[in-house]
Length: 143
Image (cartoon, helix red, strand yellow):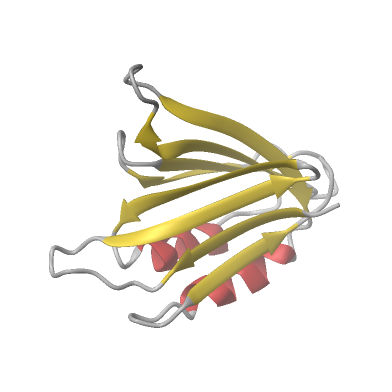
């Protein structure tokens, strides 16, 4: 079974400084996906924050993408033990409201990963360029 976080974008925008991202996360058979609006530098900012993330027990890093009402993703990276094993909690809120309710669907997905997996994820985030398909993927294991 796959345990994965994937962030996609073409970093294309209409001049207002925002771009559309698509975020997909899965842990085994449980999945969530949304589209959201963010800045063209969000991928690089997430990479910078993760490069400072230390694999020391109790360390946490929270990062948000999107805006309320139009799709959001809350990421929490945490170190869970003395060996530096990590866990990612992802809270996803859909990009549209449910008809007649004023609410949006949401899901919380969690999977474990090794600290070394962050390096490749950051390399992919750093390679995002405007007007080209971009993808960064953090793969892991059951939490």
